[in-house]
Amino acid sequence: MAALRYWSAGESHGKALVAIVEGLPAGLEIDNEAIDAELRRRQGGYGRGGRQRIETDRVEILSGVWKNHTLGSPLTLQVVNKDYKLERMEDLPRPRPGHGDLAGAVKYLGSIRGILERASARETAVRVAAGALASQLLRQFGAEALGYVMELGGVVITPREGTLVEQRKWRDESELYTLNPEKDPELKKLVDETGKAGDTLGGIVEVRVEGLPFGLGSHAHWDRKLDGRLAQAVMSIQAIKGVEIGLGFEAARRVGSRVHDPIHYDPAQRGRPNLGYLRSTNHAGGLEAGMTNGQPLVVRAAKKPISTLRKSLDSINLDTKQPQPASYERSDVCALSAASVIVENVVAFEVASAMVEKFGGDSLEEMRARWKLFLEMAAER
Image (tube, rainbow, N blue to C red):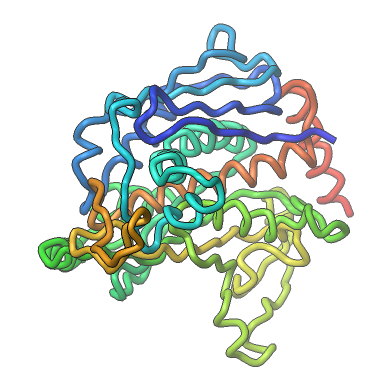
């Protein structure tokens, strides 16, 4: 069974962050600028801190590509850290609540510095690069992902209805990466007031993936169910504390007739990814029994406020065990916009992995042939 996967390595203030991506078919043309554009979006968004003014993230592909096309061998992605200073940095004496400082220092019987450098969300730069690479594979099959902010600091921003192209335009016009740019002044004021108080903000982001075929994932094996794989991938992102698919927790508050999506059929749409099967609602979020069902995939993630506060919480000195305010490291007031980019690309990678699992071959040409054959057979069913 073909498998698309990746590993990451590197520390926040180390020389570089690296990801090794294995399983991309040969023959995929790579657009480095499209990857760099996602890295720039990850660094943007209102409420970011000083680190983003230091770094200018760009991807270097060190292996697995010849003349801008994948070879079928592992790709090595590198994002260099301009703010490399790890060897000159001191340890933190007081663990910060909400971080892995205390748990990691006890687990490894070592330093807080050794934990925070790897636990840092700086690591997500190469996860975004890997996801942006996977998105280029998805586009070969007519699938597109879009991530945006839905709620910030308790303020709900209802997504404006429109096509994926329209919504991407609105999202890119917003400094907060919402689908309602006109709400930016209100949200920016909230971020500013929170920052002045020495506090931080979190919120909820949503990712929608359109154009997916039926049958990605599995009903037969617990570890291949796509909803489970998506939840694990998204929950692995720093500061994400909850994941919903479709209605999510709201489904538990309704009766069944207001949860499940009625099925209709329109023969005129047989040639589309939905194969003509229509739903008047999409409460399932495009997944049933661990498999895509021809409807848009909808995933939401809840991000907690950033754990590093200028208004420090109580902590202790690990050496003396005496109470002291928590240590402070340079941080953001709100990184929710960046989180929407990270979640979008993590979801894109997991969906691309499921595509490779179902249709994969050694080359893109072989994979495309299998995809076309499946759609023809499914439409004739």
